[in-house]
Length: 448
Image (cartoon, rainbow, N blue to C red):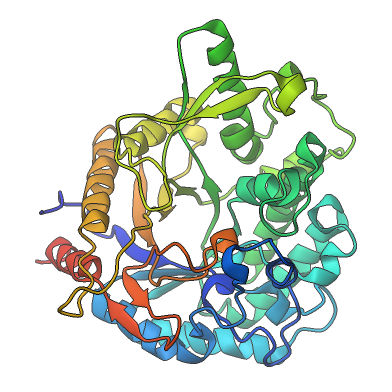
């Protein structure tokens, strides 16, 4: 399978997150995060798994950087663990934590790989959660302080940054439904956590620029929303879900306004939005990170019975991943073209900062991991991305999720997304067939 040719300078890379791969949760002054607390609470994570060791990237990062270099990528998106830098969320910086990321950045640059750190990938310091977490407005200011300390150390070499990863997922799973850390089930009362994440993003943009940032993004999880039928009720429910999942975090940043949520009885001027906040949130950024996995099919629901004005339906007639997620490559084209249509000139260049799949792959009798389903997935989605670019969408890069099999949040170690297999008993890394396919594809892309 030969990929279509992409423009010169198009970025190719992989993505990871600190709590999912680093381990070493008690070493070198790192403080506890909400995920340490959540994972160690009985019944929260499948099989009682935790990120205490994960992939042990904290100690094995040179091996992992060597795997990236051999793969042929030019960009590595990773996250920085806030509790490593400021163990209690504020106060003096932990020098040993900064030293770790200093070594990682230098190791990447020595291999010709651009570091693209994400400042927040869900591992909030537990001390801040004890004060209310993202429901507390002060957390936004503590985040900007943490960003300043980090950029002061790394900004001479790191020129591209991502502020937050998937604030909609952290909001919904962590604060609304209680499926992820910190395990709150506040439903619509969780909306201040959305605003305060966005405020943190906006406050941080000028901080990063002050330390030499040339490119600042936010990574939003986006999904094309489809109505389950043409009925007025289903169409209205789909519009409401689109407002929550997509527009709640894109509109304030790109347009300086929140979507109208009055259809579900929520005020358009809630008390947690202070004068001037939207001006801060809509501070210019240089790109939009888009994480895409699948479309979402929505039907009307009885809000009185479920607490939600929409109902999720399965997309039938498609292949699913080991996670049960539908595989719909054309949804990526639909999403990107739709973003361009909705935001027009307000839409900055896009980078696909996550896209990948979980497969039930095990070593064969030859010891190799023949993950054909992942190769098919990658080929189809990268081709769909190319179609969106041909339709006029400005996309600058594609970063697949993920380099390594890792701790998959509430699923523990039960789902494998990596191009490289991690044996969680020995921590041995074994490149899968998808790794070698991606390697060959990148060589073909970069040939003279």
